[in-house]
Length: 342
Image (cartoon, rainbow, N blue to C red; front, side, top):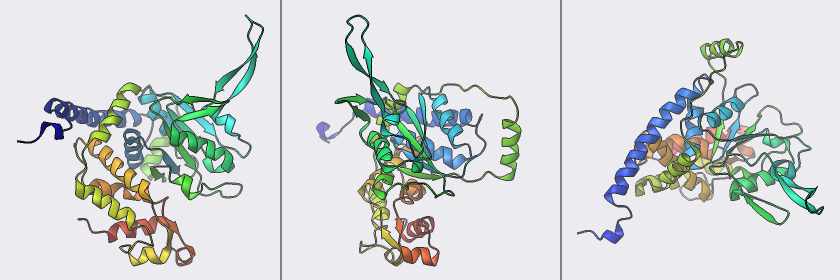
């Protein structure tokens, strides 16, 4: 007989989690339908967005202007009854413009002057940090500290951010003048880098027809914030088989040029690879992808499907790579292909 103390969940707990997995899979279909009322195409972008939501991962969106990145993120917030905050990053933006500031007010009852904290736009469930590379490092750091800690410190007080809390930052890849690229250590705070591409010709025709009329569909609320928090906990309880975790670690370790098992291409063309946080994010994302597809445990295919967006902003090409035309995307694709499926 097995030791009951060694079993973390009862049969009833396991059955409840299986019911929750089926609920997540159904919620995914409903969310895709609601988002599809406003967003045309971008199926993979939406999938990665939903994975990040349930895995508690922040995302960095890279794409040229006009690809509906803002509309997509606001639509997600609307479909989930989540509060939405948008911050337009500019060179003169200050940390207090993000987090909030203390203002001096007079108490009418006592006549005394007291400080009151006025919360900034970071106090929302879903925060869009638009063109995050346009603001100086000090202001970037204020955002990234909130992302990491889930709270804001001001005037000697600490204020908790609302939960769930997700930051979706955007970068414009074509304008580099007057920008402050995020350092690698700060990029590492993002679970995914999601590349948003151009729509197909048919999709673009549909977008033009939809956006040049007065049609603005209302969205049905799919999940409450409280239920999202419960389902995020479910992702943590989802079991990952040892070989799945080992595969995620093997892919991340193979991105490091100093690792003995790294492919020769990585040793030649990569200056710096992914750290242990990438392995953690890859396993969490694989778990979230599994339950979104109605499965209670991730497979190696889930890991391989998400290795690209987890690694691409964590693999730093060296000058040899730039000279020979090897981008981070090409290196990550070659890296994944070089690691045996297992």
